[in-house]
Length: 240
Ligand code: ZN
Image 1 (cartoon, rainbow, N blue to C red):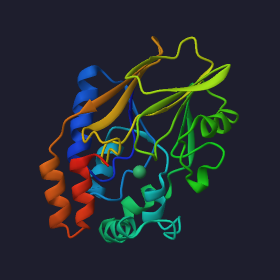
Image 2: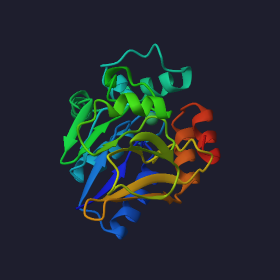
Image 3: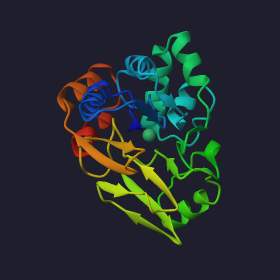
Image 4: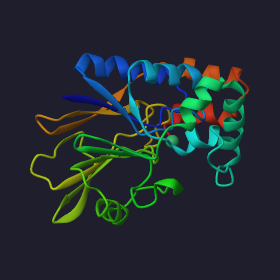
């Protein structure tokens, strides 16, 4: 089985389509997503439709739950908050219901999905350090856990102790457990503006991180035309 792994799409349809084309070319049987389908970008409903049509298994991101009125906006910065209000005005009752019904965690075979961490999924903490990974790994019952939220691709490996890797290809066959963040499809923050995603082959047990060029010009002009904050367009060019 080959899984296409996508997170933090953030209503960026151009990035999503580019990533899906690349993953399809590589050969994918099913898609997994760690949430934040909406927020920041100009195409929330089109991105939800695309994700649903692929039968993607999805968990809730903080932006999804905020748009669905399941999470307070107190901890959102002003730009993120403005984008959530803008998104809420565009969701149909059907899209709203879809976001409302997303769970915080989900298991698919030997894989667990969560947006933030397993120790505090409802608070959407960032899993950034080996210590954060250690805490989450204690609750992880599957070999692999996929996370999102930080928008930075990284893998944490438990093999006696916890280490991390930025390698683009990682073999987890001999590893006790792993946590993988594939980076963000729609708003990369590692100073590489290319869309980020990953592929996991359950037979070879190899995780491949992928970077994909997409039409940033089109995505940013949609953001500006929509009247969303300019900074949300600018950051896509910078990858931060
Ligand atoms: Zn996000």
